[in-house]
Image 1 (cartoon, helix red, strand yellow):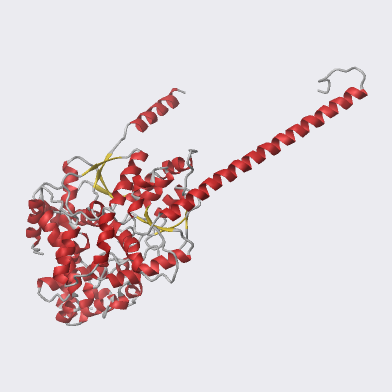
Image 2 (cartoon, one colour):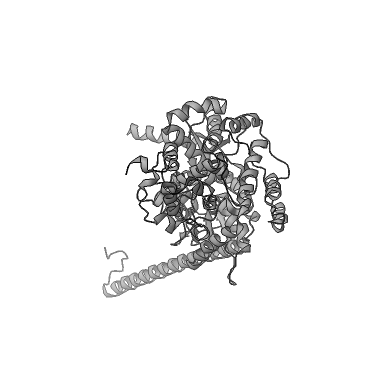
Length: 361
Length: 180
């Protein structure tokens, strides 16, 4: 008996005290063209009780221009950030941008697998580097918290969870699933780890074909025509699958599908909003759209949100009415039963001369 | 097959990333999934063939290696672990080193402007990137219509965000021998 009490006490203590502070590497896009990813991530980790602290004086990971130009540069630029996190005493670094995640995790792997490279790093970086910090993507973090998300999303509250029943297309693109030895994803051809987070929010993840196709990534500025060709195929397939929004976890995918969607031929079809997974989770947890940066998108999210709110209110009203009807029916049944019982008792009383109620035991 | 029949380029690639391009048996699965195949003269399996048996110069001067988005679909699907994306990464690097790189002007302008921003500030400053890109590429009117929308949504920082350790970042560029 006492062991049970002890275990509960330990659990309570663990719940009160955040066990780990994660280093946070926002990357340039979250400080630039996609601040809503940063805002929504900060709001969601706070709601989930996860503590993060930005790596002081972090630098750009080099993105695809770094490793496309020089392999060593493609390792050394992200490695400086790992070295800074290490020096500050962190064990894991949270990296929401899929491209930054890919570069940091690829650098960690390259240094771990190549002793000569590992030996070179302190000289190149001009600081000690043990390669001790793990790299954590946002989908992995949310998957760890999926049970908490599901509980909070299903908890009763004044404004109902608008995500229940929303049809969403989980778009992974390249870097959340490839290369498989660097990505923390599940199946590189048919990943489900974002779909599962969407389901934890109460929403429906649609089946579709383009979830791991490339959006054109880094050619957004330098070869926009390719990005429009690739993006159009993704948007059209999402629409065909009945999705009401596309969900991403990469700022570059967001730029290419949100900002660039307006330049894609749509054959008169309505534009489809593109939301970050952190915005979906935030809405499911009851956070305000303003706190999640939803007003910053190019494709307006408000028509979808008001539709979802109306549907949620309708659902709650329907559920309430159904519950009331059920209660009324049960009450009617109970009343009828009581009436029958009373009639039976009355019959009995009428039949047997001694008028003593409760004699039917 | 012995390594002596391999081109010098294939040997250089093997030395750099431990992949022997000659082990590619030309199934074409990489090209079937390549998002840029329809826009490239040489598709990934053809690049693999050329680096193994073709002329070194032709392989390095080809524009197709610069149209690779590094999406890694080819390397993920390759049934013989030939890593076409890794091979193409090394090809670009050798092409730059040997002065044979022939990227489309816009893509070259983008990479150079991107790296220049990092060397200057330690982080990417998007306004600086776009200005540098326009000057290098000549695409002056590109994306001009998006600028007001980006500004009103708080998506463009006018001033660069220079880090304190920018000297360390410049040292990294020097140590890697890269001058954007």
